[in-house]
Image (cartoon, rainbow, N blue to C red; front, side):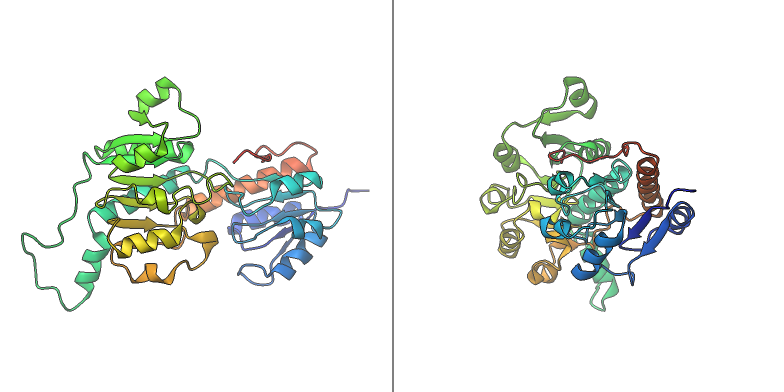
Length: 328
């Protein structure tokens, strides 16, 4: 007799070609609507599924994992970040966790550079002016921004995305600096033309632009806290395409309002919340709805990674993108 098809539950809609292939191979179910699952819906999915495909909006904590059914053996996350999943508890309960690394690197690095350009060259302000009825025409001192070339860029987190940002920044003539929990090899530093700072405080105090590219972990929560934000030069800007929790958002808002920091480009907020509503009112802030990895190509590649992880698991092998506690 043929073996039972795995029951796979996707909490949100996936790219059509990925869903079609999953439906061919497995017993695929999707959430009741294309919106984040409510907690009770997520709990029910974990009770009936062999494999769960969540995303960053699904907080899978110890309590939910305690309600998981005996058949749940793989959480194949649609996304690289896994800070919304209690990986250690899942592992203790015999549930594997996989993710989709690498595929979002270039897209997120592109968005980081886009935010830097938007802030330094005041692109959103110029757009708003052109869309209003108040534009009085060009003048020599109108909409003066800052030249990108020559600016000091301090990258916090020099993994795949941080290094991709460094390569792009160098092409714009920026000076690349970085802080990382581990220093890169000398040859990698030379290739990137990047200077390492062991002290994050010292780096922050000297940069024109700070880019957050580290994952959200207990050790990076509010790594850019009020004290550290106050070290930034008043004319400096900060960009975050990683996770909102790395920055103390309320402290940043206060400093932006007081013009103690020149600007912020935020593609992420605290766990995808609406964030501090005062941020929306500030002209020196560019807010985006987590668009860093939002390309058609990237979403398909993410879905294909999910598919490969599930198929490999179904064949009795270790998923190629297995996440272990402490990896991120």
